[in-house]
Length: 152
Image 1 (cartoon, rainbow, N blue to C red):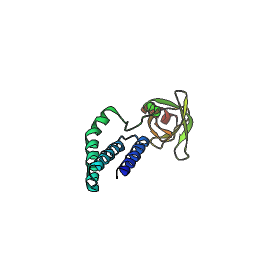
Image 2: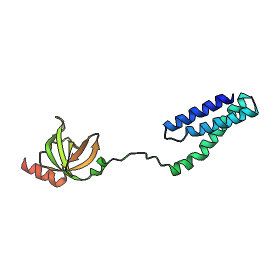
Image 3: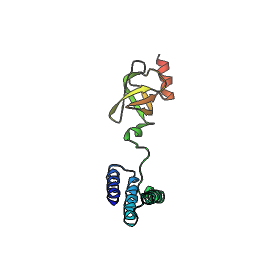
Image 4: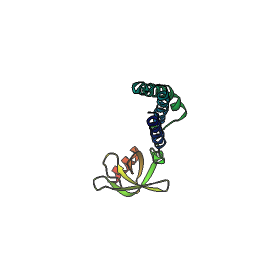
């Protein structure tokens, strides 16, 4: 039976190399401990119990320690989110119904849509409020709304 436990340990270690959770590793250690137990007793229930108990204990007691040293980010922030709150200039008039609109910010051109489904003319200054997929969601600042409504 020790050969099967050794194979199981090898499989667990190979699977651990393909993952980043550092969880399957402890199942491999548990399989090695069960393999050692198989040299002492041929009772499969005892070997399986050693595997389960040792794996569980290792996971419970070492998971907090691993989390302390290996920090996996919960959310990956990209540079795209750094433009939220900044001002941009409309280069192609924004019309949500037609799906048109582009803005220019820091030399980059972004597809854009209006936050309030309002049409925004070319050369208007807008504020970026969020990112929706590959589009910047923009709105006219309060001062700009007054200027746009005065020209209409």
